[in-house]
Image 1 (cartoon, one colour):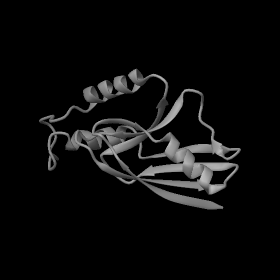
Image 2 (cartoon, one colour):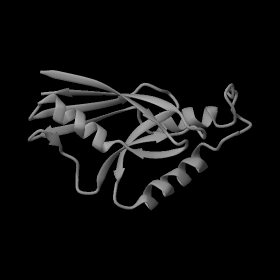
Image 3 (tube, rainbow, N blue to C red):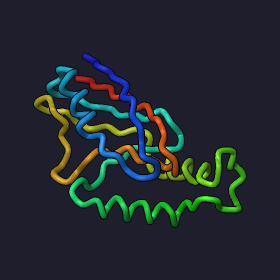
Amino acid sequence: MAYQEILELRTAGRGTRDIGADVARVVAASGVGCGLAHVFVQHTSCSLTITENADADVRRDLETVMARLAPDGDPAYRHDMEGPDDMSAHVRSVLTDTGLAVPVGAGRLLLGTWQGIFLWEHRAAPQRRRVVVTVIG
């Protein structure tokens, strides 16, 4: 059995947005008791991550690390069609991931105690994003 929904999400700009409850809702609607939830973002300038959900400082620190690895406006970048955060957003997306797989058991996501699912926006301005959640069981 397979079940799929597309989440239409808005971000506040650069940073993380917890989408765990949205994904959990899709899993519950799927009726799958045991299987896999695949989460995929349909964009090249944001990503998905599973990380600490209890202390927001972890996500702020991850943003600090990314700013060092892929700074906005680096003069070495050629691609800057949409501004100084354009190429850095693409680099950050490649360094993280656009898809995640999470096990499903007893009809729910089997995340660890301190794990959450986050949409990580890499553009500075607010964006509209589409996230495909496919549940297979």
